[in-house]
Image 1 (cartoon, rainbow, N blue to C red):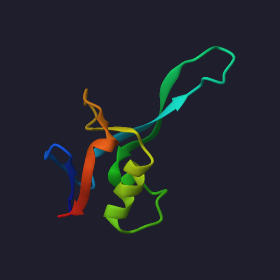
Image 2: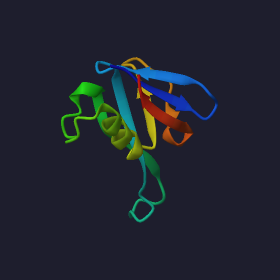
Image 3: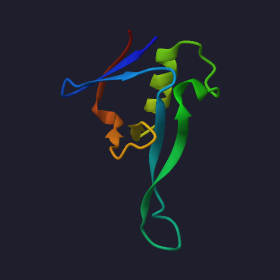
Image 4: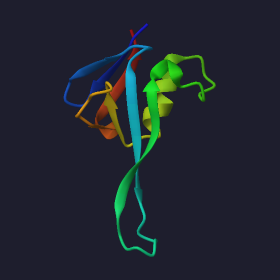
Length: 94
């Protein structure tokens, strides 16, 4: 089974269970003693089927939960492209 992510610009991305995904969440340390800095915290890295921390057996619910808690994601181990999750229009099961 594949999951199809459709973006606001109409582009589509196919995610399979063995697709490598890396997700990050934007954080601000503006309250730190070291001044205002901004950075990303990686929250998931691996094949989507590795997401064992999710209780749902529904693959769409898993990817919705993962991307819903992330600000950025990339697909593929050697990817040099990060995608902003707010650019997602829909997620569907193929």
